[in-house]
Length: 213
Image (cartoon, rainbow, N blue to C red; front, side, top):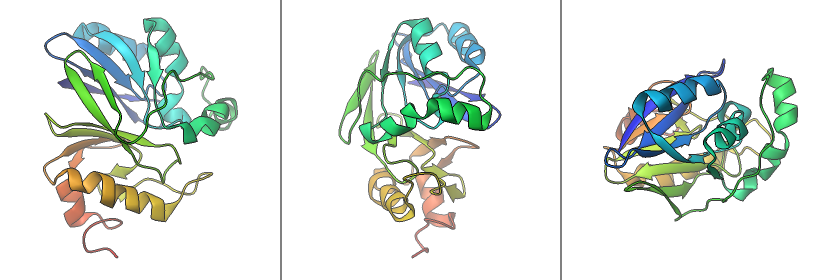
């Protein structure tokens, strides 16, 4: 599996284009905005987009979902159904954060713990990781040991929990029980900022590292 990170929106959200290097079929994860940049990356890499995947429904991750799904004529998979209320609030989020083109959308498949998503010969595992939002999911490729974690975990930090239905203890539990057991050598793409590994965050993250109780 190959990937390209495409920072989008004023929040510099790490929209990610994943694709199978054998078939060139791929998926766009968290198309938050700047649809033209996403489309350009797809064209540059000659990827055949087969689906849109969402970790959660905050507007900086989901604002261009309808545009991208309609343009490539593909289904939307994710997040977990508990984020439906955030999808319903897309118009409110649009006004609050000044997003010009964000539209409400309907997901084609809700995702749950233990599900998988496929494109080409790639199969990603789905992990339910609520806390930042109640319906947040994470995508993990066991073959390359790479995860797209959205806003659950960052290099040196964790996701905010002060939004509606965010919950700090739930977020910490999601990280420690669902993500860290995948292995210290797992690299992850966060929703914002640079990549890291679960091992590095266990050692040094001041919010969720092994020394924090």
